[in-house]
Length: 454
Image 1 (cartoon, rainbow, N blue to C red):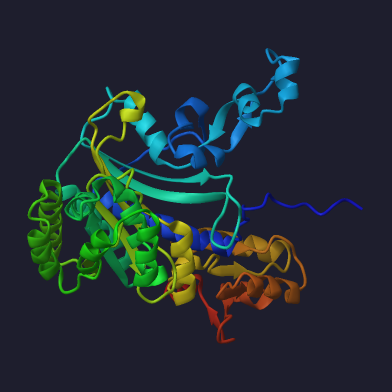
Image 2: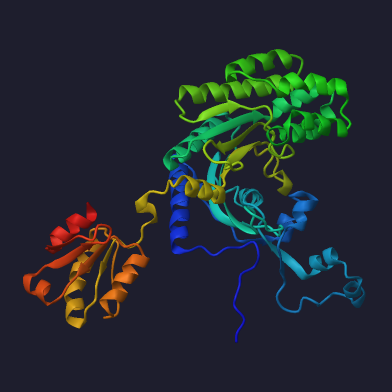
């Protein structure tokens, strides 16, 4: 007996219902991207390894899926090299390409390659899968989608304001209550400066980023373990525990960071974003959160993170400002800001809150039962007419038993079934059955259309 087929760990099949839900998510996000003037690009699933390697740190390099060269990939490799069993060195000879790890590095490569064709500022979005050779576990996959929007070639904070508006609009369309948390890398730099530990900024922010998960006592213990003196940790406490409205937090920070030029610049930027967003009537809660860090080695200005308020789950969107997107490819000074929506986590949130609109996940709306050639010939013009009117409809292809055809309708959750026999054909009508209520009625083709579309 043939072995049962399977799929690689960390990948998934998606059923028709799941695909309908995912497409609802992608289409909703895509519509908002278009509304704000973002244009879609796509990049290849595979990139040259020279493009990918060294962009994500040592750990990221290990998580790249490398693609074996076609043809005689042993050509040019010595027996000594083969016997050395040096996996990294051999992979560099066997593999010239790899699957993309994220959408940001390919985007940077795209901007550099196409800079003479692009009008700046360039507002682009991408909705494509990425691959990571990570250890699969709940909520972490080796293949998953990213939904990114970035604007490059502009330093204006109006871009940050628009990103907050986009986040608010996307989750408003989904019906999900969210908290949009913002911070600024410059504020965090200023905090590290005024406690006398500027060189420990990464250690400080990595620790305070865990405040919600491990509590203040453990955060302080982690800070101490990184060699930060108790005096500096004591100075940090009122900043970590800063509370009040956004306005109150900003006023306190202006005093606390008075001697830090970078810190005050971050406060000024945050104040502009928060005031402008507030004046524009953003419905979501927008909060200045000093414990938000988000990969400090990458971001240089404003940073964002979005949390669902009614579901216990991690961040469902995030992003920020970076000053040198294309520098790794020799094109310096290209500032940008972007966000990424976590489609897989949004999928889980909408499932838990049961927020998918019926029309988004329903497939066929009307099934024509097939009793034979004559009946099918009668139904086909009507089927064409209802499709022309935008109704998703099909005819059962075989003249099978009625029970089998009705079972098909139930399995696909088709709400209406049209039945045509000798009597219906003589009268120029159809029997329409509502599969939810079980009610049946004799209707003309026009009446059928009106009922199904109602």
